[in-house]
Image (cartoon, rainbow, N blue to C red):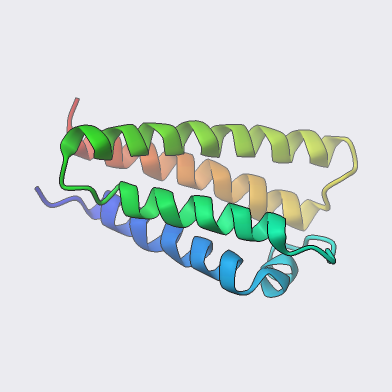
Length: 119
């Protein structure tokens, strides 16, 4: 079954994941995050994004749907976390827009991919 949302989602999630893992300092700058002497946390994020990107391409419909559902949950929690940190003054407006806003976009794209995949 052709799934434009799922394939687009895979490409975006994979790009974000691999970039965060391979270039954590650049990712910090792009997302307007404060520089960290420990790129490990961004690499953890990158590994998670990469794993989810690959899982949503599974030929097994059940696994694919589970990966999409887990991704929507993670993205929703990430969005709330970004909003909370922004409201507490811990996340700059640009970082909140790109991080939390991006998470909302990923959650919506995940839901679209789930809808394409059928109930």
